[in-house]
Length: 346
Image 1: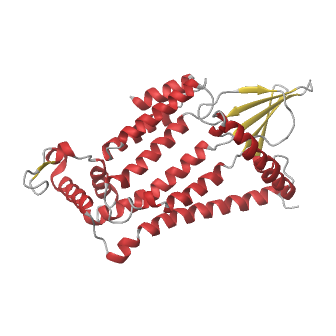
Image 2 (image 1 turned 180 degrees about the horizontal axis):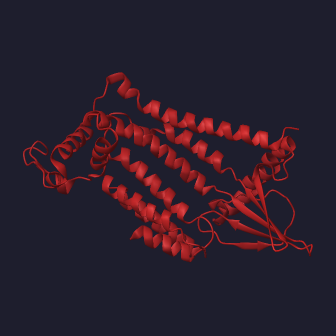
Image 3 (image 1 turned 135 degrees about the vertical axis):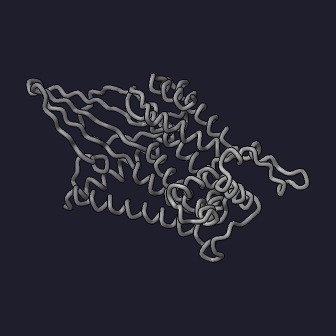
């Protein structure tokens, strides 16, 4: 029988290599246009965005905000300061000023879609991980009594604590939003859960001999005042979901067509800002009822970047509002949800 820790280490390295492959492919696919045609900004809107970035770099923010471009919208001209989402231009200028001062504005504008395409791939993988993250199981054993109390703390977004007297080591169902939707819940319980428990986990137990199979990552035991507490961190297929999501996002046509090298358009930056906003929002709802101020503020800042970069920001605001409302309707309202949404919205 192969030792569990050895199989786990090899498995983790394999997942890491697949994630690296996904990110490297996201980069190389988007670089095809630059490798074939050179560092050239192509199409109409990307070239105007390049001109706007160049003007911002040469004249500064105040002149950019009051710039009236006589070469656009001929013959009337265009008041750029009031008709543009400047997030992408500001991002490119900041990269030029603080990260790559030796690069030209043209080169940075060509590579920004590539860089942010890779970042969007990673952010989407993190979002998939957060939506699939696992369960903490805490077993408290007293040295003077034989009673065992099992407390499950769900780490998924919006979940609360619950107590159970079950002491067996049967593989537990992994947390999923599908388990909370009427009708879909029945389908999920009848198909996904049996497949996971009766096939995948059992095969892993046969291979490694680990009592929790894929679910068991590690156990931590602490002793305090005569009682022993053992915490088992159960791993759901969150890592696998993140890696598969990264593979899909690296080459999905809908994102690829807006993040190819030289295609310097707003969506190339906005898609990353959008996915990172969703990730920070779901991350702020993880754990118990204790508010997570850092991730709540980060979700608001990421959304600010989204607003500055693209006019589709209203969809992000509406979707997070709908998600918060659904959590309330499902009876999952908590101080954490209130604080997270308040900090995000403010």
